[in-house]
Amino acid sequence: MQLAVIVEDDLPLSKPVARVALALAAILCIAASYWQMGAPFEFHLPQADFEVYYTAASLIQDHQREAIYDGADTGIDPQLRNPAENSTFAREALCRGLLVTGLFVYPPTLAYLTAPLGSLPVAKAEALWKMLNWAATLTMAALLSRLLGIRLWSLSGLSIALFLFAFRPSLECFFWGQVTLLLTLLEVAGMFLYVRGCKGAAAFFFALAAAIKLTPAIVLVPLIAWRDWKTLRAFLAWSGAILAALCLPDKGRLVFDFFARVLPPMAPGIVRINNKGLSASLQVFWHALRPGASTEWLAIFAKLVSVCLVLYAGWLCRSKSGVEKGSDRFEALSLLWLLSCCLAPVSWRHAYVPCAPALLILSKRLLEGRARVTEAILLLSFLLSISSFGFAVLAQSTGNPLITAWAISAPVLGIALVIVELRRMRSENRATRLPAESNGASESTVPCFTP
Image (cartoon, rainbow, N blue to C red; front, side, top):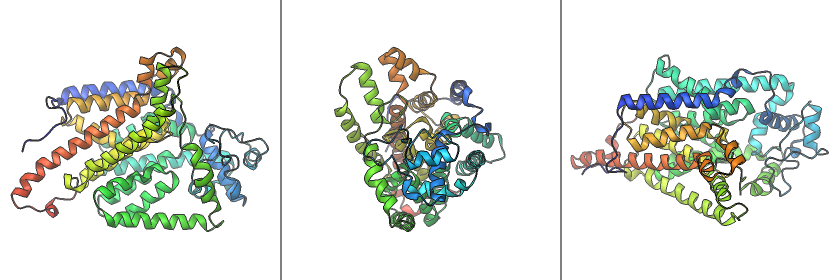
């Protein structure tokens, strides 16, 4: 049987052309991110998002844990809102010398994990937080180098580290003090252990990531598709243990408050051009086409499409397609994380850090001359879109639908890239699987990935 391809006449991109195209895209991305390049080194500047975490951690330290959602559990979307001046949350921030400009909207896991930082002066806590982000980025570079079969102390290994630091979402994490770099480290560490057969330990990292922010729970989709019941049971067991630990201090009141009062108002998302989730992007574009028109129907449509895309991605990952080797599962997991970034109700640019492993895998394919033209166009377009060049500001000032279309294109390009790559993996694995089966080889003979 011939290998089925997504676009029949789609030809591989030659190595020289691929390298020139990727180099040009890298130069443009660096130019777009140039003003934030100093963020990893600016230890003295405040980090607005971390200061929200720090205030919640301080409340834990001061035995006022019940107040971490003060102002966020009113039934009104707490995102992008300031705490009331007379609230316990605002008073705690003021006592610490802060004018907090946001409410704590994460599960209580993050507040408990960062509680030790609440015992430090804010300047020292912020410096330590930035050092932790440095350590997370370097550790990710080491793990991803191993997963890609690249020596860490080589030009390619150095390039991976430089990419992780210069990637626009990473720079925004350093600038705002976001938790996303540490969250991505948990996902990469889990993936590193998973492809080496340490499924119980991998499940712990996956469960901890999902307990800090819910979107990493998308890992359940490929686990079910692969019928990996052992890892799935371990994930559920670790999740139950983490939930029990969170419920111990206050009999579950904080957990209940988050899921019953904080999370539901956030579910619709935020319709802003800087929110790079699919639902928000479609609604922003519709407003550009028809100013003032209702977008409620579009929000419902986007949610239905998101569910269908997750199910379709899981179907493409299923074991019968031959996605069984460690290298395939590494790539599939990475692509699913990229998909989760695109489909989340709220997905600011810094939330796209988890897509870095997928971008590295696909860039390596491109440089090796194994990527087709369609893949290359989608990959390079996505890289340029997520880096931005001020198009969001231009779109807001002009209202031009074409400019708006490019400004909100990241989730659409990301979704297209995921589907194209999963279909390509399925086709390639079916093409290699059928001859092996005709020769009497069993599924167990598929070698594991050991870079």
